[in-house]
Every structure is written in structure tokens, then in C-alpha cells.
Image 1 (cartoon, one colour):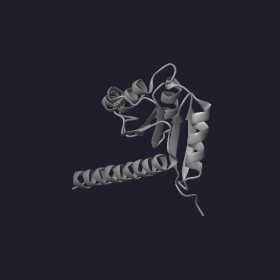
Image 2: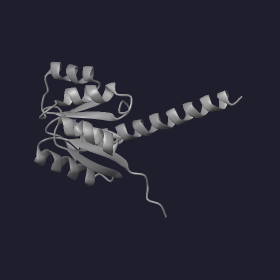
Image 3: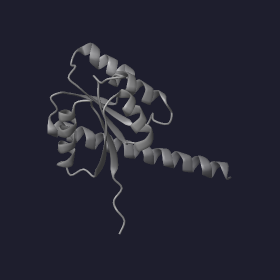
Image 4: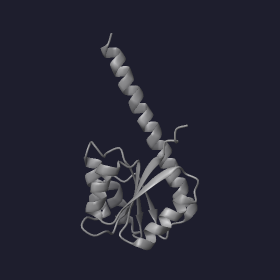
Length: 149
């Protein structure tokens, strides 16, 4: 019997306590996820390329590159554009939210993180990602069928 396909989640945060909390919340959620961790902005870009996550929980205030910069680079690259990004931030000023949206984030969550809010957002974002993947497969199939006529 084959293993169920697990969604891949990358937690990008330089604070070990935050990482442990997010891992615990996701581990207790019942979601079928495989988790990887990145400790700074540059590490996040490298892990996004190698781990190929479906979703990144991205801290804004990180060393080397901020979450805003990481998000902008990922959304600007065709290879990583489809990764869902949930910015997790202690910043709660309106301007920070605007910067997150301008950088391309799919959603954001303020710290301290509430378990129910995190799990529901992750669940919904992974569902949306999977629907988007299925639509893309169908689009390619239709294009191929039309090309074969």
C-alpha cells in the first residue's frame, strides 16, 4: 500500500521557539504534512528550491534577507511562483500589511499565533494550492488535445 501524498510545508523563522511552536501546532493538527525548516532569508530561498514546498510559513524579520525580500524573489521566479506564502509576523502596522501584499504574499497571520487560525489557514491554503495544480494539469491536457487534432 502506498503512502498518502503529503503536502510540504517550509517553516522559515530564525527564532527556534517560534519554529517549535509552529511545528507542534501543525503536528497536532491532523494535517498530512512534511515539514522542513529554514533559519534565514537566504536559507529560505535555497530550501524553497531543493525542498519544493507547497506552502511557506514565512517570518518577516529574518537575517540576511527579510521575509518581504524572500517573498518578492519567490513570487518573481517562475519556478517558485506557485508556492503559497503565509507571512507570520509580529508587525501589525497597516504599512507592513501593504508591504506584504506588494511583495506577493498570499496571506498573513499576526504573532502571537493562534493554533486554530494557523491550522485553518494552512488547511485552506493547501486546498487552494491543490485545486490550482489540478486546474493547471487540466489546462495542459486540453492544450495537448487541441494540438493533437
